[in-house]
Every structure is written in structure tokens, then in C-alpha cells.
Image 1 (cartoon, rainbow, N blue to C red):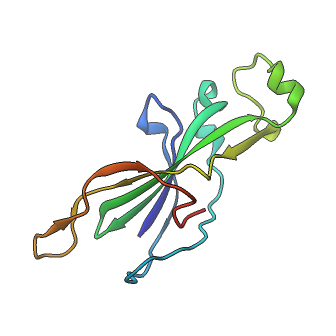
Image 2 (tube, rainbow, N blue to C red; image 1 turned 90 degrees about the horizontal axis):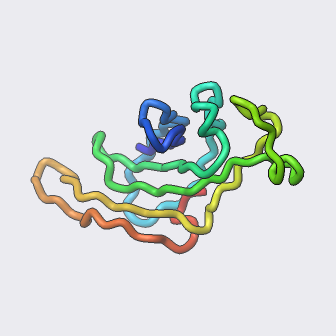
Length: 138
């Protein structure tokens, strides 16, 4: 299965939002797919952390164990150039005036060591790497 998570705060996981979970049939080989999810609920993000850089993660799980994580940096800012240069001093930005820019060309890919079946054999070293391209998700 896959799970998409929006990191709502770099300081506290309680603000993370699971945007979607999808069961993916286990096909052998390389798989690519387009994954579209709804935007995060801005009312669940601290006002001081709505603007700026955050992360959206796509996690792949097998029998509830994460074996792959693809993270994308996302910059949230005002769509209007004047507001970007001189942002209003408000407690919570008006989300209707914001845009999200996903750095989709530079995903961060991490593979985790898991036991794939009951045989107890673990494979895939837990190594972070910078992928080239969209790593099959977008």
C-alpha cells in the first residue's frame, strides 16, 4: 500500500496529515503511476508554519512495514509577487492567496530494510539517496 503525508510542522509530528492511503497490487518489477491527492487542511497547520518550506512524503508499505519513502520539498508562498516581497503581518495567512510549488525533480528516496515474508530474510539496505527524476510518482 502507499500513504501520502503532508508534514504540517517541522517541530511536531502531531500536525502531520495523512492525505491518502491506497492499496497497490503487488506486481513484480518496476511500477509507475500517477498519484493525485487533496490538499492538506490548512486549519490543522500552525499559522506560523503555513508559509515556507515543508515536505510531502509518499511511503510504500508491505504488510504494514515501510520499505520505501519518497519525499518532496514543497514551498508555500503568496502567489502575488508584491505579497511575496512584502507579506502582510497576520497570525494566519489567507490560504486563498497562497500557492504550493513542489520540487518534483529532486525527490529524496530512502529505502528501508524489511522482512518481505515469513522466511525471515531481510533485504534492501536502509540508505537515503537523492534520486534523479520523479522516482515513478508525481
